[in-house]
Structure formats: C-alpha cells, structure tokens
Image (tube, rainbow, N blue to C red; front, side):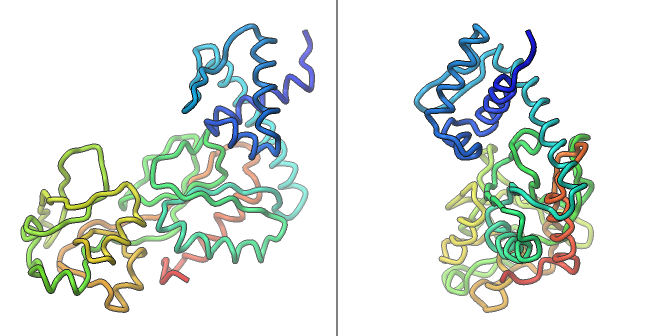
Length: 308
C-alpha cells in the first residue's frame, strides 16, 4: 500500500507526542487542538492494529510496538526538518521557530537578554527558550540548541552532537555578610563541616566539595541544611542568608560586586567551568540554529561578564 500524505502527518504527530511526553504540549507545538491530536493518535493505532502508547492520567509511555514505530517516525521527521532547514539555509536569512534549552541561572540572567538582542538582528526568527537544570535529550527532545555548563575539559558529547564552547567561568564559595556575623568565616576547606551548606541536589546521599591549592586537592564532606535541584533556587537561598553555597561566578558576580555576597577561601580553586552550545549534528542544521550559536559565541567571546 502506497504511503499517503495523511500517513506522514500521523507519523510526525506521533513523534511529537513522544518527544513532548504529553498531548497538550504536542498540540501546542503543532498548533493543533489537543482533542485533534488525541483523535488522530487513536485513529493511527486503529489503522495499524496495535497499541502504541500506554495512557494514564499522569504520564504517557511507549509500548514495545510504539518504541519501534517511533524510531522510524523520528527518522522521517528528522529528514523533513533537515530538508526544510536546508531549503531555508539556501533561501537566505534565518527564519522560523528556534527552540533553545538552558540551565535556570544562565538562561534567565544571560540567555534571555541575548535572545532579545538576537531577535533585533534576525526579526524573522521566533525563539522558544525553556530553562531546566535537569539533563535533556538533545537529539530527540525537539531542541535546536541546548546550552549547558560543564567542568573544564573536553566535553564527552555523543558523536551525533556538535559542541561549541561559548565561554569559561569558575565556581566560588560564598555567603552573605549577615551569615558571617553569626558563623565564623572558614579559613580552610575543612572548616565547612561546621557550616550550613547549600548543596545542589544529587542522587548520592553524601556530597563532597573539592578544593585545590598548590596542586593538592582536598575533598570535604559538607553537611547540608538545604538542597535543591535548581541553581536559581540555590542562588536565592544564598542571598537570603540561609547558608554557604558553591555557585558559578556568572550567577553571583553582581552580588559579589555589590557586597550582597562575600567570597570565601579565595586562595583555593574549586572548579573551572565551560559553557557549551550543543546542536544535533545533522545534514541541513537550521540556519537559525547556526546563527544563534554564532551570535552567542561572539557575544560571550570575552567572557560572560555581568548579567544585563
């Protein structure tokens, strides 16, 4: 049986539902009604004679048949996206919707102002910026550009990803002056065991902070009075005087300059950081994605600086 246009539409629709993990989000992305998406998926399952998705009130999950079908659908949508991107790239100025994902602090304080400047230069592009500190699927998450912060060194990226370093930064240990009025300022990393430390939530029940001086590392197990999986929440907790935190310098540079936060243990190096732009490496990468990465690289060429 020959493939019909409606079959291709259904494949794209199914792929978007899987990538967005909800009918509502997929409908918004496709510019369709949720009821239409649900009805088309039900019709697709009926035509194929197999269930593709397990549906509950809280989540969607793929059946074995659904996973196999999605893998083929993803190829179709990727080729369609690549064809459109190639045509747009050959057709002149970047245009269309650019989907970007970035960590919370970096996204709110640096990427959002950068997007404003980018749109002035490329008015035919529309940007969707989502901020999320959790890992994202760069290849299948539906993003054109994913910005991430990693420790200095070669980025361990998949072969199917293109990675471009945008800027360098570092981690700093800091707290408010008010906090240090109540707690002795640490002179050596081991003093942190006597402090209220604000930690980034991890799966491990215990967390160590690493400090280096004269090439000698010190690993300090820090007690936590508060933890969060969101960098912006930790930044605000530190500014509220809740404890001592280790944060990216770009997130607190203005607070350090104003005196709202004070750095401690400046003679110790914690970790150097690199800011990366990740894009799926495919034929016909959208011109809008290439233009945005080039724009960020030029904007942050001399470092992230102060947030606007």
